[in-house]
Length: 188
Image (cartoon, rainbow, N blue to C red; front, top):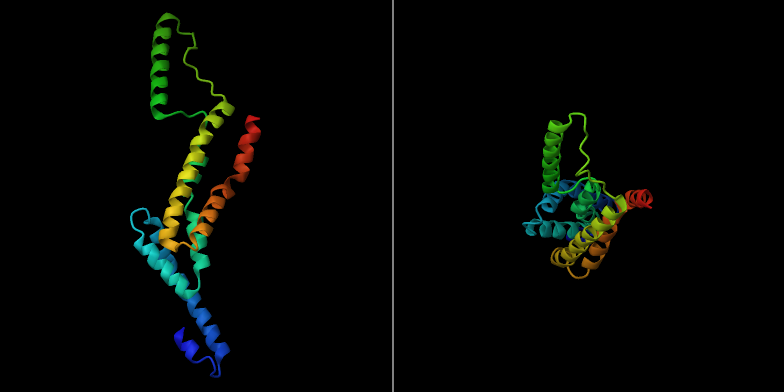
């Protein structure tokens, strides 16, 4: 960079600029695995991510880093959204229900082998289950955004942090739009 500035009035500027651009792109490709590793480990160590930020800034490639960062941050929120199933309760509730049904089947079998147990059959109202679950999911989104406000300042600085938080918020919902519409349609 500083060499290019020193030679700015010398012939061949266009070729030098093209070469520098090509080198920046190659370096960005080489830095990508380090960035992905730093993003995976940022819950325990921010140093490697901060080093990546410095290198990407020097290359003038912050937009690519920010895009990757924003894309990866809401992963847990997405997993929680797509794992939601109104017919599945907690493991403890499932185990207790299975035990109750087994006991009932054993006792009913002894009385009448053709009788089908009728107690403990759980019917889940999908609308009530979704409405009950949704505030917890939104709370997790809010917790992520709160953490991003803090982490964004630490990693990217005060000037870029608001853009990062807004990007993470958008990315929380972007892949869920069709699923959200489908869930609302199914319960209304």
